[in-house]
Length: 245
Image (cartoon, rainbow, N blue to C red):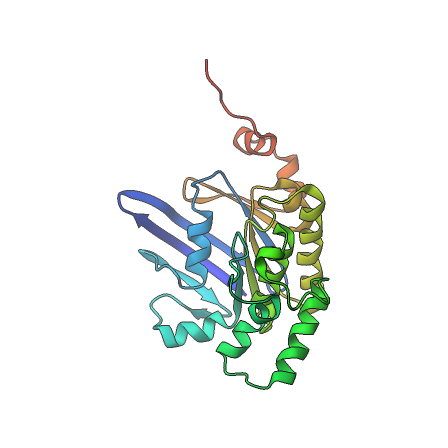
């Protein structure tokens, strides 16, 4: 579904990505972990063409998206949905209007079709009957769910998640993890999840990539990561810093 080859990106004098390589198979969930500032969110933005690399290649279903114009990128973006950290809902729109926004942007004008599609999404995210609520009246977890419904309403092949459980309590975080898995099973969607939440990572990942100093330091299954004796990986898993003398 997605293949990244030798991706490099500098912001000012700082080299954020230093030759990133990985692939994600159709229907797979890849979790990307790493310390703050490692380049995880920058990497996600490259996958939908919001940023262009200094060098390297990104293939979405076999098509290299680097250097494509906006018209061609729009076609690629129909294949890739993205859930931003806070849900990024439109404050002036109801839940129904937020979820329906991509359909209307794509030219759908049939009100009955829109209602039916929104109702299905609300059933998927378990928020039936909440169509007329405004974002200000939603909890953090509900906002994430509505943002996710908006990201998948046009049935993308892949969904990118930027810290989907950030700021949520453990129970709500678990419900988001279950939803990510349910979407994978129901729609066979490919997922790339950026997170610091290791419990989430172990729950949803088929593979885990550890991004360190701009490149993939580790790639493997959750079990392989947990078995690793590498001190760098162990420090991250245990939340252990070098500390002060």
